[in-house]
Every structure is written in C-alpha cells, then in structure tokens.
Amino acid sequence: MKIDHCPHYGQGRCPYYGQSLSESRPISVDALKVWCRENSIPIYAGDRIPAEGAAIVLGITAATLKNRRSLGLGPPHVRTSRGARVTYRLSDLAESFRTKGNDG
Image (cartoon, rainbow, N blue to C red; front, side):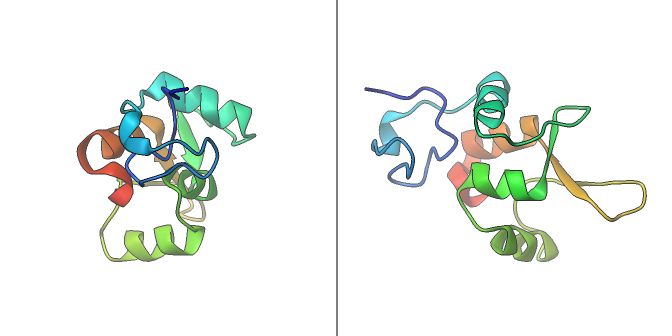
C-alpha cells in the first residue's frame, strides 16, 4: 500500500506507515493539513503549526529543529509578535519536502 501524504517523505522508511519513503509522493499542503488534524497538531491562522508539530512532521526532535533554526538551517519560521512562539507555515514545510527531503 502506498501512502500519498506521508510527512516523513525523504527519510528512508516511515516510522508510522513502515513503507519505503522513496515510494511516496512529495506531499502537498492539503495532505499536511489532513495529517496534522489526524495527529492532533494544531493549525493556526495562516496555515501555521507550532515548532513542536513541525518537528513531528519533519521526523526530528524539537531540539534538533531548534538547533537547525539557530544555525539558519531548515524551513523558514515565523515568530509571534512577542517573539515567544515559533511557528512554521505548512507551505514552507511542504516545499522543504519537495526540494530537500526532511533536511529542511
């Protein structure tokens, strides 16, 4: 069975679906929305998700995503007006899968 919306595309083998991810198609924003809803990841205005959710989508730990962010690596992020919360646009996450796999 092929999963068309696996958020772990590009990692080798999906930890949830168990299939070889080279068999998966790159994911779309709509597929990411569905996956986030199914996995209780909140979606904020502007189709943004919290950093913790983005880490899950990318298949890495929140600490790794934070480290990558501090080094200027990974998908673009958005800080709230107070700078306390970091979010990621689903479109940026989908683009990172299309261009680089999960290396963001």
